[in-house]
Length: 430
Image 1: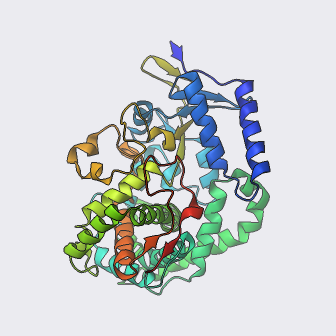
Image 2 (image 1 turned 90 degrees about the vertical axis):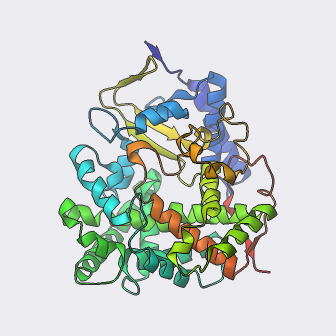
Image 3 (image 1 turned 90 degrees about the horizontal axis):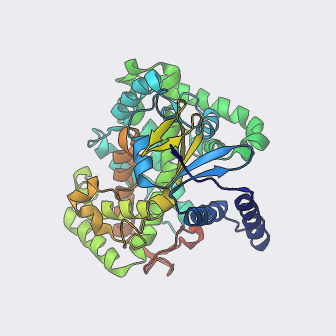
């Protein structure tokens, strides 16, 4: 049986050289993600395979940048007889929430998945979406000029949507960002993790108080929604789902919103079409209006395809597997790398271009070029519909009320660069 090609010591030395060179030439603006991405792209090209075993001497990782293999891995629910969360993913998330849905499998996943879907309104319009629109209006009433302004606004929206209006302390916005920064950074966890223990303890004490206080509350929010679904899980597991709901707003949700707003405002014809759609849809204070903004949603999906806010995820198969007559060794860490996977020129010659209208074609939803923005298969993000609704609401409000335009020219034409530079995000009011 075939095996995937494997890197060697020379490849590893190239990576170390690229890291050292990048840091020496630009220590303040050093972008680890960009350097690793360039190295991975070079490895894929030199070995002539979309899937390559990265040999780091002490550890081997199967890099998956091919759509077909990734779909195969993500297709079925997490199961110890198939594919489960990777060790790198589990180690990181366990720091914050060892019972999180994203690192569960077997019976625990079967228990937590419907619970999260019920609270977040997966696959439907959330029953509290009118209240959520009002929270977004309140949060985005202040002018924004950069990504940090948007992150602050999303933090305010998060507090209202998750916990209810004027219920949760504002310090939770910073708490979740600090704690989640440890999840994806093992070096940071080692160096700073023990210093954040008190923050973590106080964070969960506050969540527990908010949970208990929301039981008799009639405020329309995710927490009050969760009380009706509580039998699906224990209170301990329940509380450990909340951090991911929170961070989606101030983390990947903010990145998706800000990047999409940049793409729209940097292209005159796209901006005009979005504004016209907003104008014709009706009052932005009504949730029903947001549902009509199909072209705006297409811009979000296309931006997420080009510049995914979540660039990778990890899995392992404890028993091993074979796919297309190629062997996947047992217990090997598997890295899905989305920036390359979502730009396969062999599948789509327009892959480096901003083409939102591709998402308006119903046939595209089943197309092999469908974005991994929200993962795929059984592991599709349960918060997909909610965060798209929030992002659409916020962008519509900002474009309608603040008439924003973009300062950047880098993203105004195709082909687009492989990675999005946050420093390019600057907005101005006319």
